Image 1 (cartoon, rainbow, N blue to C red):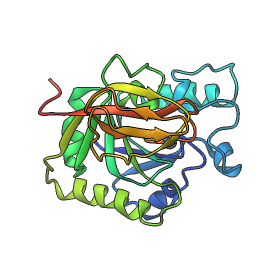
Image 2: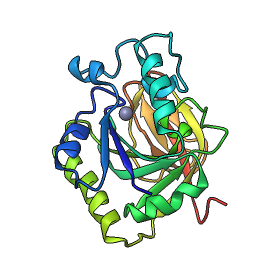
Image 3: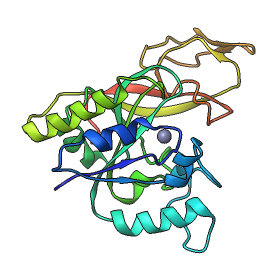
Image 4: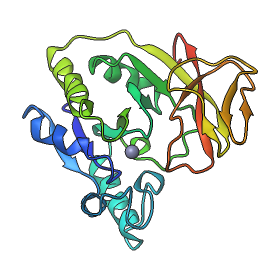
Length: 227
Ligand SMILES: [Zn+2]
């Protein structure tokens, strides 16, 4: 299935525009939220990735979501995002069947957002979707690293990624002392002011996302399959 690449669901994640300019012609491409890109803001009225399936009579992002939910239904979509903190490129899926697509894209890390954590409000919940995350937002290598995934796709090879599944969310407003995908041990101090200690062994990701004001990170554990 021919992939559709979606950039700028969040308007302050502009590397997706560069990916669009350099993407091989085989792939389709669209910019999800041009109004937010123009303002260099995550969103105009509401976080687009939290309002699917949208509302045709709603605010700006709800209207975009309603149109995209129709347009992307049943399609294979690669949804480009970036993170606040440094982060190796990884994929997020909400359906185990999307692991094959992640391997075709050459990903080295894939996180399965299990039904307890995937709320059905994100773009990838409404298509055959995979989100790519890399960061931080302004890092100049982001576009090149994402483009390497599309080259890998065209070569037809498959990677053998590390697999993770989400097991929790750490709430807190302190300064994180942890890094994306660097494992932490139970009892380790993972944030200061106020201090937070790890309740279990886990692998942190989406550490210190500025858009989630009360979330320190998400917790994942390594797994051998998503079945
Ligand atoms: Zn994003």
